[in-house]
Length: 255
Image (cartoon, rainbow, N blue to C red; front, top):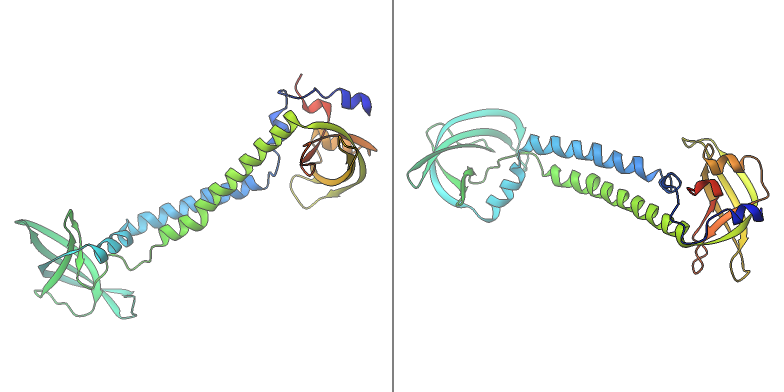
């Protein structure tokens, strides 16, 4: 075992293989891509479905100008307003600074063809308009909600994995090497790929005994080494934080 420990390069070990560290906390990667890809697709679909209208409704709620408009057509729908009343689609026209504008919005049953109604619009974007008391969209702002509960957590999970990979690489580059005594190796078949759960103990540079466990891919170099039931194996640990440690073999360092 001492020969195997001596075969590991001294710190700093710039020859750490990336294939060793990228598998660290690998379940975070599919979780992150699931949240980012599927969450992103749902966000895009909802965005195109609403075309930004929930956002325009909020702008009109807080910063709208009012002008008189003329109803040109009223169409029935199978939707409802927020208060549960039946909604109709109202088409109308109005003029802003001698410019004839057209629009439509949803409102409760009431307006008829030829009626004069109040129209709300944005002063800097008069094409954003609606009947006073109506809505541009009967959908809630699901775009923002979906983005918050899928894409943002996906980015956070991906960054967590990246930070974990970089921290592990830093540990393997600068950590102390010791001999870990293998206490038990158990195969856990339910994950894909198959994983080994290894329990071990080791002594740090002050001869204090430390224990820990480590998940290892069964088909990795380290996993194949552990499958031979060794009594001891090399471990790299942080001198000040011994709970940060990682089982290694000399083959995992490029020569």
